[in-house]
Length: 297
Image (cartoon, rainbow, N blue to C red; front, side, top):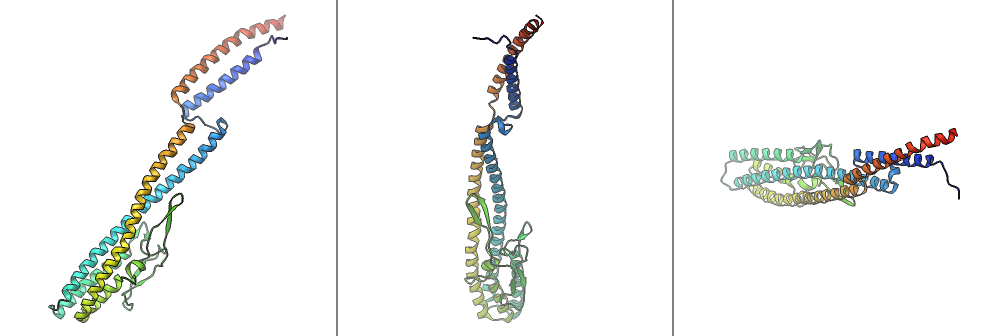
């Protein structure tokens, strides 16, 4: 059996490997990551890419959900103001239909109802972050404009489209109802009821005032039913936000299990690698002079 008398190449290879491992461990300690380049762990690197995509998608879903919660709260608050305005109009209608008011009184009440009508139209034209809430999908178009020649006293300029937004994988939510459905529904025409009441008061038509007040009461009930939509969506968004927060924690935990460095273990490994490297350097220091003497002989 032949024995290689020159151990230097083997020791140099050991030294190279030791130094390489030391650099890897130092980088892990500095970054806190086990995988600093794909070659460190190709399978783990692939899983990290998928995990990162999942976290970015989760962040986007959370942003969508937060923005929609603001929209739903604004829509619900707006409709609550409409409900209060309609209750005031109904109270004035009851007062005007009592039969005890003079023509002048009825004209004064008509002016108050007109003020409420303007208030309701203004609320129906509410916007959120630059987009009209009740214009269907035509969110840049003011949905309602006054039109004395129209039966309802207004024209609807929006459309009947609805918007949907993805709030989680496989989960989309409808985020609006068209203004024509909310304020001019066949089962409850808020705009028509207000216009009818104003006209009856101006004409001193007591029977007409009573009929308009009754119709406005039905419109109030209908609008309250439409308002439930926004409350239900808000509840769904709240539940979704909780789910997304839990999913975010799960993704972060998974990423840590793939890539996070055990700092105590890495420090121990570094110490051992440095000891091993010192031993290799000492062995090389002894062998190199011997190899030189053999060469001189």
